[in-house]
Amino acid sequence: MSIQTVLVANRGEIAVRIIRSCRELGLRAVAVYSDADADALHVRLADEAHRIGPAPARASYLDVDALLGAAKAAGADAVHPGYGLLSEDAGFAEAVTGAGLTFVGPSAEVIARMGDKVAARALAEECGVPVPPGTGDLSVEEATQAAAELGFPLVVKASFGGGGRGMRVVHSADELADAMAAAGREAGAAFGRSEVHLERYLERPRHVEVQVIGDAHGAVVHLVDRDCSVQRRHQKLIEEAPAFGLSDTLRARLLDAAVTLARKVGYVGAGTVEFLVLPTSEEFFFLEMNTRLQVEHGVTELVTGLDIVATQLRVAGGAPLPFTQDDVRVSGHAIQARIAAEDPWADFRPAPGAVTGLALPLGPGVRNDFGVEAGGAVAPEYDSMFGKVLAHGADRDAARRRLVAALGELRVEGVPTTAPYLREVLGSASFAAGTHDTGSVQREWVPDPATKPGAGVGSGAGGGAGAGTAGSGSGPAGAGVVSGGATVPTRRVRLATDRGPVEVAVYGRTVRPGAAATASTRPTRESAGAAAGSSSAAGTVPVAPMDATVVQVRVQPGQELAPGDVVAVLEAMKMEMEIRTEVGGTVGQVLVGAGSPVAAGSPLITLI
Image (cartoon, rainbow, N blue to C red):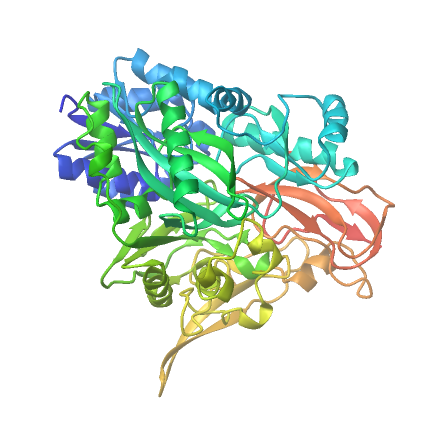
């Protein structure tokens, strides 16, 4: 292999994953890190590591000059972008090759062509692949007319990027302008491009994708398919391979469409062609092509026995694919659960913080891909996902039951996780029967308060091991419990009992206005409201659930509010969240402005 040293232009669990494949191939792996990641796992595992800037991604992991400078300093001859960040940025790919380095992925031209969702739709149509009715990039005025012609519901989609970012479902004309603005903001923040277009929204589809890989010698093969239908706000939560419940005819058509599209663009490297599928009618529609490694690549590796990352590196070094289509065989079934520092019982609010304890499940057929270890942290500047638990079994039900057991063994202390919620989903009758679709999370798998794990203990998924806490008190000063949209401070005390150790959440006392907040004296929901000037009769005022940036303020002084009205839109950990008032009243003061940072627990308005 001509490649000897690989700079991994990413962080977290995917950086760890790439570094491990480099080791197996005998390649040197170079890590990069921001100030927030100086002690991260991927930094420790790499052969060499270089600082590239301060914590914000735009000043570090998205800084092309800093990344290329690190590559030069390390003597790297290749750059692997992982996924997210700059992985689908054509300008970055071009800069890498322009610096005389090998980019582990398709060419900048292919990234640009397939990254433009409108152009990719046109290419799919040219290849005879069905696409949903839709439009090109348009303004709000143009969208209003197009929406009337297409009919509702519609989905507003970012024209560049992927991963479910920059998407909003619209059910009426009144929602269109706000949805386009929100999708454009989110896409601009994630991908640097804010153009959006419209597509007809398909009711209750499944999300099925095909893993493809090609080499520079003209070979393109598929590594079968995956189902990624368990989603919330277009973000995948559970993925499995192969896709279940497809007829042989439908599966063959999907695989052929994906390979045809990849061949058409001369695809080199690993990529994924995504479809919306209606199994009962045998219909499918092209969604997008992701020109990078996918978060869910591990389930494909488990059922095929192939190392996709190692194959990427070999292909990037000029070698032909080490297997043909006939060599690709599927053995059993694999399912993956994404583990994120979010509280499902508080509207999946991100909850970064210190991971004070971590015990990963073991056993036959279980794989763990994590980017943190005990004593590490989930940083607020980046994505909330910090790990994945995968299970492989002889068939779908065996894999499902194995993953349920593995999530029951997982223990994460210091932050809440999605693990308990995903364990419930995996154990549901509809998931077991495979009758779910992309809307099942919102429609039938809404987190039940009655099943919320107990506060103040670890966030494993079994035995009541409490994932309901957010930033529990064993984390940094000021951590708290997310409850009903506000942050309540805690610290944790471990007590010895005749039944073993028990952890108790201790709530801090109220802060007087102007007093310094400490781990034991940060404002509770009630005190924050009082400090902001709300009357005791009015109840609590809306507060920031975590450190965030204000994207929009939706109210003004003197405005009458009803319970449930949106007060502001905040952004944290690459997610936008609407903050609603729990009580009615008249707005007194607006305490924040668009673009300003806001600390966890800070009131956004006063009520009079």
